[in-house]
Image (cartoon, helix red, strand yellow):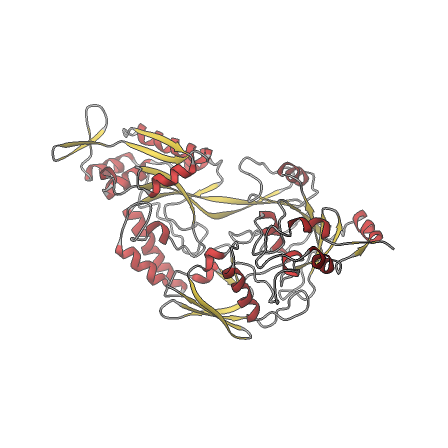
Length: 532
């Protein structure tokens, strides 16, 4: 009887694309993959009828199944089924142990000791331990991976026992364990074979076989440490393009579709499909060059902030796919607090702010003031990135708000490289920016007194950031983050506009609530069930 190779056709072509330590020869790959063979007749039978207790997902832009290296968003999502992190973020963005059991932080915030769970198996039947964690850290540190920057502050790491692991940081940062959400891979002599091509983790689903060209089968892992998943099988289809991906979802050929892959800003769920939203860490803001004499006064920056209607910007420019905020902390976070009573878009209040900085209306309806013999006119250029239509629209909305209030404002949209060059050179008045806030809410790149986009410095804020790195107590962190947010809101080096929302669309076949978070789209998949 003739036999077919499991993944050769799909995976050989990408052998040379991504690798931590290199790539196998074709002969070695064939030898490895040949262990994953199925009979042609069995393939044909399995293709005729899929397991009823199953769901299907789509796979775009395949490069490698190595979770540390893949650049494909859909591969990352599929690998959530297979691999697990030390910690994951829940719906309140708290770090929840997955492979870890607990952790302690030293008084100076630089040493983190992690105790691992000791009842976890890899899908090949071997036991998970601290040497797997150390191996993963080594791979991340030894090459360019998706997570190299996450560990940039790490001075040292080591397995201190079979189930204990220690991390030493160069300097303390807030809640460092919130960054340890990357997948852990199994220790092996090299990564040239199995780990690069055939997924094998500790998660609820394990790779089973290739059933046919463009279709893979993942089966529930019987010895999963959180209990066997309720859904028996996952079918993964390779999809040629985004249009096909969307059409397959609408035809119920696949059961999940994410906003990380498809632009769902104007997508309306059809039939009984559900839109499962979450708030991402992508923060859009208005930045002020505080070195500009027109913007050096805190009251002026507060007044400008009050003019902007954030909800209107969210509704008109990103189709309500965002959550307005006044502080640079994700509104879903346990550390978020509402500051809406501090500043409101109120013309009288704004006029008072501008008046406190000695701005007054002249006969032409413009805000002016005199500094010595010099007459200053309150007028601005807003700088934005022309490669982003959304940012251009946001800049125009903000400019219109200022202009209507008597502050003439123009918009300059530049290609990204020119836009960044002017910001780095502090050659701008006001800018529209976007940044992915780190999972531990460390805004050092934005507000550190040593260097930031806004020529802003506040030693009290620097001190608070240091204090946040020295405690793992949630109540202490809440109190410190409140001070942290208050300083930014009061000093207003930038105005937070909104945090973007993300989406996971689920078809009617999936009965359960899907609980996506910023780091894992399908973090509760083992609890899902399907309709009969």
